[in-house]
Amino acid sequence: MPTKSEFESALKDALRAGDETRKRTLRMILSGVKLAEVERRGPLDEAGLLAVLQKEAKTRSEAIADAEKAGRADLVAAAQAELVLLESYLPRPLSAEELEALARKAIADAGAASPGDMGRVMKQLMPQIQGRADGKAASDLVRRLLA
Image (cartoon, rainbow, N blue to C red; front, side):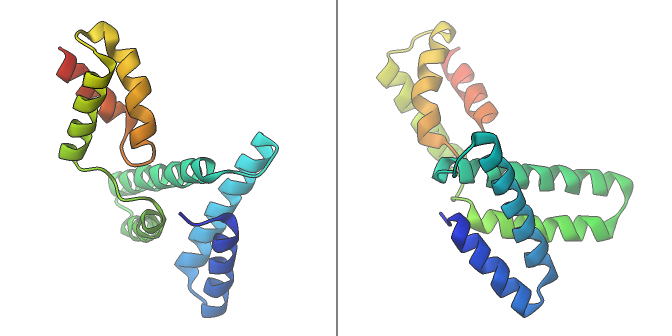
């Protein structure tokens, strides 16, 4: 997982190389990091940096969908290029099978038997999947497994 200083160094390299997409994306990442640091009143840890990257990736995904609806191929291409760069900094996402295995293990560890135990299961599961799987997808999967 890169640090803020590594992003700053990558930005300097992109500036020297004249790579517009990398410059724009790295500036956007650093802006998000700075905003999060101001809100938090201190430097971000790895989890905070990961949250910023995920938020920016989600924003780019939504921008792609909106641009496709509007028929703006130029904006779609730009947002996709930014998303590819963002995803290169994110950890590898869990596959559906890996997520299900972790969910089943969390259910067993929590001793859950009914949907009423979902809170205990999610409390145990979320730290394991943080940054690698969508919380809503995990919640839906646990709900289905407990039903």
